[in-house]
Length: 129
Image (cartoon, rainbow, N blue to C red; front, side, top):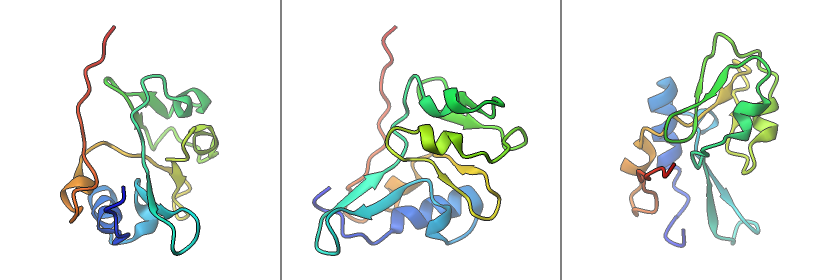
């Protein structure tokens, strides 16, 4: 992460891929500073939990565990309660202020393709059962 310059290209790529807009507020990946303006950047995004707490917190079944990790969102079922956002252990789920629905990473890798310093990568992991 030391190479991240906070350009937000990954966030713009994500928002454009998910919603067709150039707004970092609609991104499923978040670049944040730690320790103020002179601190290093950190990446907050879905880690593809195999047993996602966000899905467990969803009382209407709008979030379902995805095969291989992460979750799938059924926007029609979602009530916008925000419990998934609260339940996410790393804070990777944010709520869209317009739709009141969670912004969930779909693990498409768009963020990695637009990172100019190759800070990000999308890796396929083998699940041992």
